[in-house]
Length: 223
Image 1 (tube, one colour):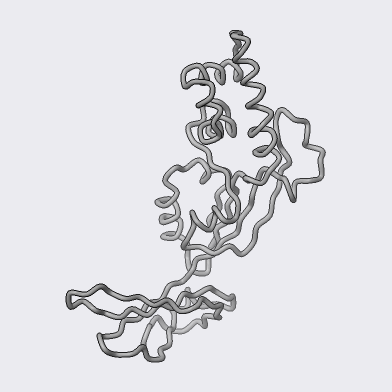
Image 2 (spheres, one colour):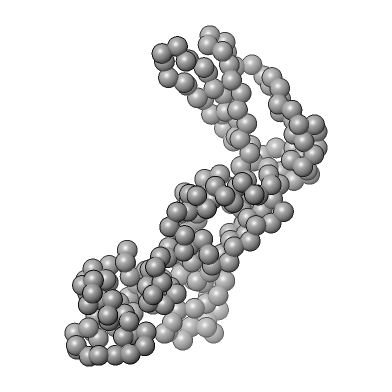
């Protein structure tokens, strides 16, 4: 099963809820393929971060009245205040998908890992050399400075076992139903919980992650 998202999730402010819904519909052996705007791109670093901001600052100093997209940017700047509008925390929202866009975010792989904690990255690459108004389409640098960051992710399967108070963790095995098991490797988190519910907090110990092959066995999880 594949969940595919092209240019959507970087416009979602509540990415936690979006990731939760993706994980709900994505099977454990499925893949999320997503395109996100790239932080380490020519468009973000040079065009949006420098060229457009300097151009808008110069235009605002002339007090000229303009139409179209530049006119809307000038109206935004005068409404918010030019320095506040040029702050990248605000400016990025209006410069990825025109001046009326309400929200945008740029990503690198660390940000992807932070915003999608229940998925693991299996592949990433960049495409699409774009940095308007700069004429960069013919540059062969898209693999390094491309605007579109493509990321392939798979679910992290988490298995928990509980031990009564005073009992040390014992060896256990986990088996899965056929729709979980296949010939592909899947990342599994092994977590041991010790129940200290008698007016004491619960302690959780997480063992190191590993890659395991999950055979198509019956749905069961036993000690």
